[in-house]
Image (cartoon, rainbow, N blue to C red):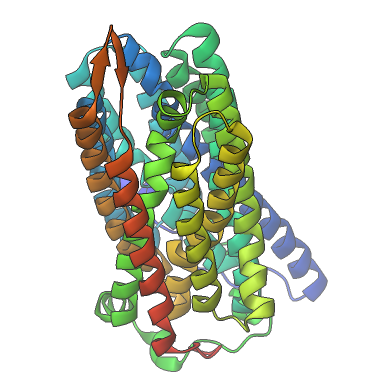
Length: 449
C-alpha cells in the first residue's frame, strides 16, 4: 500500500557490539544524509523560483499579466503553506528517503508539463500542484537533521543545511536565466525539471530513515548526550505535536517568520523584474546580481549557526535582531539608489542576502526546533511554514496587483512603480525583526529539554 511505502520502518536491535563498527556505519550514514538534504533541498528551489526568472519574457509574450502572475504565485504559496503544515506532521512518521525524493520527482514532472503550456488557467493549476510537491522538501530535511545530529552540533549543521536554498537559488539565477535568454521561457521549466528527475532518483538511494531502523542507537546515545525528559521520551508523537501548537513562543516565531517571508519572496519573486524594469538591467545582468545575493545568502546561512552557538551561547534572538536590522537598511538602500549604479545595487542585494541567510536559519526552523522536542521537529517546521507562506502568498498577490495598478504605458513601453511594494516589504521586515527579538522572554532551553 502507498501508506506503507512512506511509513517509517520498525526499530532494529543494535547490529554490532563493536563500537568501531557502529561508528563507521553511523558516520557514513550521517554524511550521506547531510549531503543529501543539503543539495537535494537546494534543487527543490530550481523548480520553484524559475518562474521569477521567466516573468519579463512571459509578460512580453503576453502569456499572462502581472496581476495573473501574482495570482499564480499566491496559489503556489497558499498550497505550499498548507502542504508544509500537513507534510511537516507527516514527516515525523515517514521514511524520509522515500518521502522527500518522491516530492522532488513529482515537482520535476509538473515543471516539465509547465514548459508545454501557455494557457493561464492550466498554468495556474499545475503551479498550484507544484506548490504541494514543493512542500515535501523542508520538513523531512529538518527531521533528518534532528534524528542524525545531536543538539550540541545541530546549530552548525542546520546553518550549513539552510544554505541549500541559496545553492538552488544561485543555480536558478544563472542557469535558468541562461536557458531563457538563449532558448525561450519554456526552457526555464524544462531545464530544472530534467535535472530534478535525475536528482530525485539519487536522493532515493542516498537519504536514510531514522538511525534505529538500521540497527543504530539514537543519536543522543551515540553522542553521549542526556536524553529528553522521561515525559518527552514516553509521550506519543501526537502528544508532542500538540505541545507545539500550544507553545506561545512557536506562535510568535511563526508570525515573525511570516513577516520575514514577505520581504524574502518580494525580492525572490519580483526582484529580477524590478532590476530589469526600474534599474535598466538585462535579464543576464539581473541574474548575475541575484546570483551575488544568493551567494551572500549562503554565507549568512552557513555562518549563522556557528555565530549563535559560539558567540552568543546558543541564543538566536540577539543575532536575529542584528540580521533583521541589516535587512531593513539594505532594502531601503536598494530602493533609494538611482538607476545607473549597478555595482551599488548589487552591494545592497548582497547585504540583503547575507541578512536573509542568517534569519532563515533562525526563524525558518532552528529557533522552533530549540523550543520543542526533536520528535516533533517536523510539526514545528510545518506550523512555522504555514504562517511563512500564507503571508508570502498574500505578498505575491498584493505585489502583482499594486504593480498593475501603477503601470504606465507610453509609446508602447510599460513602466511599473515599485514604491508601494517596497513599503510593504520593508514594513514586514521591520515587524519580523521586532517579533524575533521578543523571543528572549522564553530564555535559552536547557540541553535536556
